[in-house]
Figure (cartoon, rainbow over the protein chains, first blue to last red):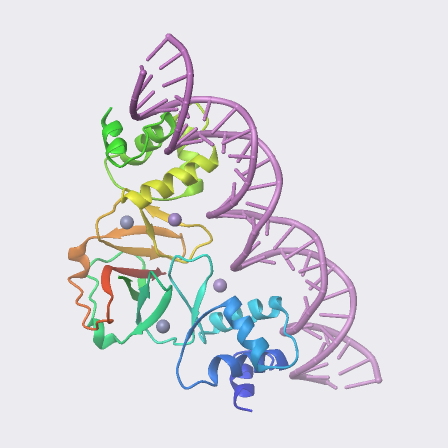
Length: 132
Length: 132
DNA sequence: ACACTTATTTAGAATCATTATAAAGTAGTT
DNA sequence: AACTACTTTATAATGATTCTAAATAAGTGT
Ligand SMILES: [Mn+2]
Ligand SMILES: [Mn+2]
Ligand SMILES: [Zn+2]
Ligand SMILES: [Zn+2]
């Protein structure tokens, strides 16, 4: 299995639940955005056994810490995650609450001129809000 | 009172509570960022009477709808608001959880090249995450 | 000033995403 | 197999936010 090594190399035991969640998250043509509840539903659709919601939360946070997922900074009542962990930007459609990836070429390089003493930049993310 | 007309012109009755919240939010030299709980504390410090938490929520949302406040898209367990309603960007210090305004000149113009059919851009916000 | 209507405030309850708990199960190791 | 550390799970707890419905205040017309 291709995810067993990935998990082991991260210090995560390749449990049945984690491998199944890997399949739902990473066995796709395209990357995607999701909330925990959407992921829970997707898991229910794709697999027969049950994975507890606590495990889904635990796993998503473990994967986020290992850099396999990232959170998208957005104001919603639920946290959004992204399987696209490259540095990239987003459209956010306020009407449909849909997130759309922007290519870096759609935005162009962003040069932050101001420095904060003793701090370094971890990420630069642009959120473009859309209305009708 | 300078806030009475501002509220009336927005279709909001100038109640004692709203006027007092206006003083806490807008009678300052500099703009600032806050959560509801921080605002609640600030109100307790500055005024003698009590304003219920429900009223603080109601008022902040009313002011946001009228454009006197805006929400900052950030992942936190609490919603952050900003008394600076101009288009501007932020540093977010992951260690201290502090938000710092960036001047537009610190970032430079951002040109979004991609268009979404039937949608127009409402805002373009950059979040720069800082680590040690 | 008074009566009337509508907006606002309020305490408290409800909601709901997320996190914590602690017991049972599993993976890795010798 | 025995041992240990990690993981899963059901369930409870947490906590920010929203809802409810009754009391109060503001605006308007007389
Ligand atoms: Mn997290
Ligand atoms: Mn709001
Ligand atoms: Zn994305
Ligand atoms: Zn700001």
